[in-house]
Length: 150
Image (cartoon, rainbow, N blue to C red):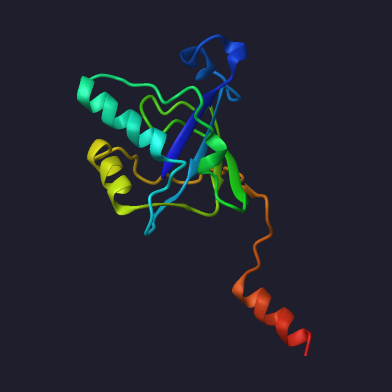
């Protein structure tokens, strides 16, 4: 999963933003293996390669267009949550896209090389309200509506 992290500029810095419930937002995008290179993702791969060569950080081109990474349909889940890294502050408005984007195996392999053990174990919902931009129809509900239409 790709996390695009943004912080609320009204707080002046990322560190200060993490102290507020509306301080940050994360757009999370599932990644799936496809057969072709994802051209929209290539600037990120290029920046990773440049950083690895310098043994430092590298910036993605200022001309990078985040919209090139989005799936065709933008249905999503959203909830108020926390950072996935210490100190796990409750400051994130999460938006998780329902559909994945596809990267080729070599692009995914580069991400796997730099993200080993880069995850937090699943957490309990802790009474969080998860909303969606679409309506979920349960299997029983769907079957019932099919029977009533006969």
